[in-house]
Image 1: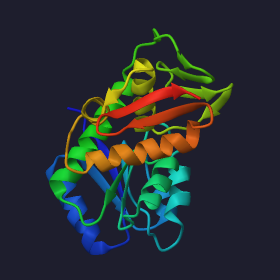
Image 2: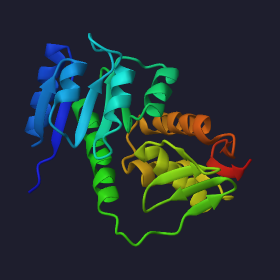
Image 3: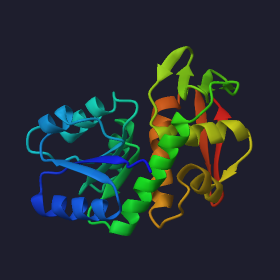
Image 4: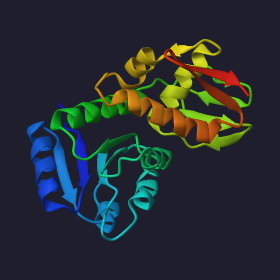
Amino acid sequence: MLVMRILVVEDDDRVARGLVTALRTASFDVQRVATAERALNAPPADLVLLDLGLPDADGIDLLRKLRKRPQTAIIAVTARSEERDRVRGLRSGADDYVVKPFGVAELLARIDAVLRRTRAARAQPEEAEPPIRIGELMLCPSTRRTRLGGDLVSLTRKEFDLLALLAQHSPSVVERGRLLDQVWGEAWEASSRTLDTHVASLRAKVGEAVHIRTVRGVGYVLDRA
């Protein structure tokens, strides 16, 4: 059985010990580092658990550098709970965002969901689905690339999955429950807020060409701008 490799980037020794113990108990291959410099020099990992409050560098800057490794998923693990912080982290390339304190069961569920999506993306066949076009927006499912008027837009895995699902059903409304089920796969308590945060991030990235409209009490719909 393939063992998934996780890099824990955490400067707090107590928190790091707890994370490493929980992850190894869950049969992951775990390495822990305490600084941004060591994180950048660490061997390749399938997923990085990244504390954004590191002593030697800005966590968001490190996140952007790690995001250049397309085969690595990233979950930001941080005490920053404000919506603007979550949106900034997601825009900078995090596949998910976990706020301290958190439960081990929730963290493991999020890791499992992110790794499932990563494995599914890697296993996609070469025969590509046709691109999805909404006005100036074009999504290519086979390469998971998004373009606006010819310019490449940088999206995280979940942002792409969310936007693609909305685009596939445009101009129909997609219910919140369906978005949570198909994009996240696990309807844990924090998912609803996570959905809204991802929508806010997407609006900032593609809002000039298309409009993601909220249908109160129902879900979201992707309209042409």
